[in-house]
Amino acid sequence: MQNLYETDFYAWTKKQANLLRHQQWNQLDLSNLIEEIESLGKQQRAELRNRWSVLIAHLLKWEYQLEKRSRSWLNTIRIQRLDTWELLAENPSLKPYLQEVLQKAYIKAIVLASGETNLPMKTFPQDCPYTVEDILNDHFFPGTRATDEIME
Image (cartoon, rainbow, N blue to C red):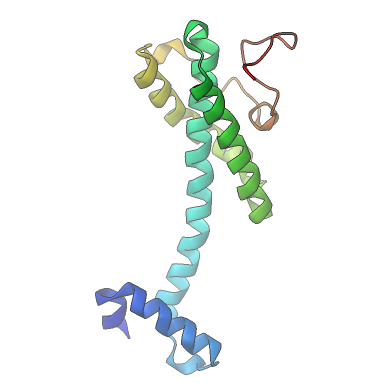
């Protein structure tokens, strides 16, 4: 079984699913199966971190380059928020991870925002200026007053 895992991962997954389906417990490749299941959970956390890096980068761009705001930035912010809500709905146990992921995602967001705006990284605060609630709030756009009209 180890050889199949190393030479044809897809075939290995099909074989493991079939063994599980038929309750052939003694034939399962348990060590690799455990590793792969743990990896799936890590992928969900990584997806959340990556989505938030992009979302926060666009919030920073929105706040720090008022004159360059665009529908593209607005759409990216909205889509990343929707995708985050969808990911949380499918994986509610990720909700407690939001606060932990915030600073990790922010570090990447600064790199993204700096690279896309040509602003020096020191332009942005060292710690994320947005709360989890701000980031998830569909009506939060930093540097925009509540009375300002967001591009509709």
